[in-house]
Length: 109
Image (cartoon, rainbow, N blue to C red; front, side, top):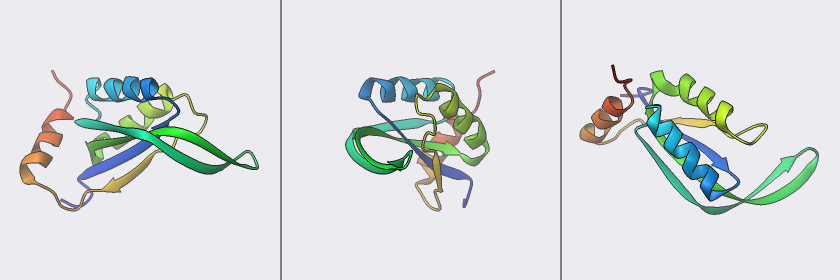
């Protein structure tokens, strides 16, 4: 199961932006599920200064073979110049849930 399934995260600067991005990802079948959490507080370096902002976190469940398309979709539809895109392997999980993730990330014919 290792490296077959992933949890991918990104953040946005507004709840409606997060919701729109989540919907477009699921509709494109790039993730079976996207959870939007927030607001969260982020502190980070940007253009030589420490910045703080309110953000919304998107957690996506997908398969490793859909990662590149998902990352490209995020880059294309994201408002940030450099969006956070981090993938973490899901090393264990419910077989039924992971089967559902695989089924819902397959393109429909």
